[in-house]
Length: 411
Image 1 (cartoon, rainbow, N blue to C red):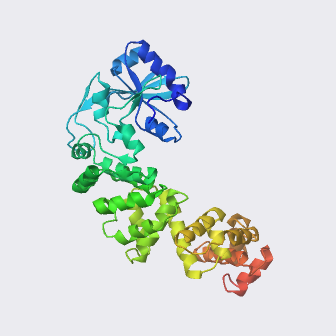
Image 2: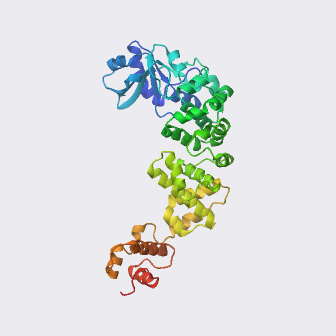
């Protein structure tokens, strides 16, 4: 395994920051995920920096800083129109809430700082020259594709129980195997996940679902019983197993959630509207929930009809309609993306605003005020135009609605 890396990309951009800290008489290193991803040949979008300098010393070195988490040793440095979080080497006390240390102690030792990190692959540091510091053999574990807790896994997971979800998430993203003692400790401490905020669990679970090797992460969740402490999943082992059997990657997180909801619904654990309650429990945004449910019901309708319906394409929109076809592929069903595109191109209208009649028109010709009847009439007109039952022309639509008793016939 390489012991020295080339300083390029984001590391090169941050180089002047590290150099300035070294020139001031302190140590400074690139640390954590950025170093790991560089070793794996993955794209690095930002870097974290750790230093022997205390926060007030960093503030003396740099003229433009923000105290984003100074009590825990982190100072935001503004340099060259860029922002860098610089954190002082530290050790941590007990974790009463299984998430945050009760207190931190600033130290001057890089090894002491790396010792508190979650996994060996994340406990590697690189200096401004590209030389690696690897006191816990993270390089070897990366080479052997192993996720191993730093030191005692029981201690690491009691410090921050979310680390267990991070382990299974990394398995899904990197195609790595979780080391045996680390795996055993996850199983023994899985119940601690209940102490963690759902929003934090949701972020890790979503990354797992969209990971290229999702199956590996889900298998680890099942074998360690982590899934039993996730919102709404305790009784959904079969649904998760179905996602393991599916070897295809999801296009995005909304598609992944939609397929999970579908698999749960197959077990009759979700009836109408209960799918929303399940998603709400995961603390997803309303906008995201709306999108997931749109895909979920689009998939159910597609399976039910067995055909690509023009009205369904119109209601979904071309982007989501194609995503539904993608989900059909996950179910081992034939997809008809090209046929779908042709149907969409041939739609008379592609947006409700293109309907040739408005609610005001119907109220004027009927001399009636707005009410439920108006929405029903407009919906009927819209669906009829999309399905080709009536020409999208104002007088044609009015006559059609009269004929079908959607507005008064005394015109």
